[in-house]
Amino acid sequence: MTATLEPPDILSAEFARDPYSAYRLLRDEFPLVWHEGMQTYVISRYEDVQRAFKDPVFTSENYAWQLEPVHGRTILQMEGREHSTHRSLVAPAFRGKALTERFGPTIRRNSRDLVDAFRADGQVDLVDAYATRFPINVIVDMLGLPRTDHDRFHGWYTSIMGFLGNLAGDEAVAAEGLRTKAEFEDYMIPRIRERRAHPGDDLLSTLCAAEIDGESMTDEEIKAFCSLLLTAGGETTDKAITSLMADLVAHPEQLEAVRQDRTLIPAAFAETLRWSPPVHMIMRQPAEDVALSGGIVQAGRTVTCLIGAANRDDRRFDRPDTFDVLRADLDHSRAFSAAADHLAFCLGRHFCVGALLSLFEIEVGVNDLLDAMTDIRFAGGEPPPETGVFTRAPGRLLLEFTPS
Image (cartoon, rainbow, N blue to C red; front, side):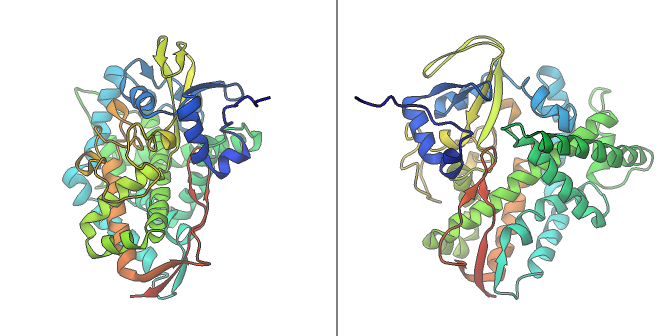
């Protein structure tokens, strides 16, 4: 008697250990599957996830229960004119000269300070010493808040990410996230009001002063955006740096190619976003019934889009399970725009507003790390395992190296 094939459970321990095998099975046999525990449809093929990110029928109304309890109402759950207005209010600070000239020195200083602390040691846990600290410190400094609060923000970041990744519904984790929201609000609102009265040359002042057609952001909206920036900007860059360095060290020839030609750093980052993205799943909610591979999704139902699966779909990418910085089917000129081939930053109207900030941080960070370390190798000789389900990367990255 032949056993009936069952779809993988994305909340199982087996899935957490090796989602990539499960992704393959989902794409090939279960492209649309209902997960009863999470009350969501799960989609995994590139064409379906791409459509969910680009087609206006797929809304972000799910963020009302997913993100709003811990962040407040953010730009991610806005649609139409409200969304375009708020995006226009915040986006200019994250591109062009406003990014490279105004905040470039802050980004470079934070990276250099962290690298200087271990560059002579010959060994490092890159996650603890650098990756989790760098983007959070940058955000605090960009906002013009005290550097002495770096550790406080790191704690808030960890708590909020625990809330957002709490797919199993742990009540203690949820309560900690809500406590953090209250603490963050008590901290930020008085500082927002102070910046309105006495603006400076920092991102928080820019957000307070931004205005389009007579519309500006409220104190609550600025606070919510700062909370979102802390997690969306921190988590993606944290895990991207970790995964990128792990991917390169695991592929010495490609590491050496990037070391010799630093213009390849964006290509290496783009391939990491495809091969081992920081965020493996994002949710959407269709406003009407939608036909996808495998069946119909009813209006109003949550859809979990498996980015990690779609980015390795052999229907879209050649040799999808191979890490290749120079792959021909990933257009690096579009990799950090709303027209990207990979899906790590979403697509269309909700494309990540901080993508260019992330790229700038990666370029600065990887250059600093390669300048400080030669002969980089895994402590113990083997690549570390990835951890996480909603977001994913090695939990520790123990490296040995020869100081430069």
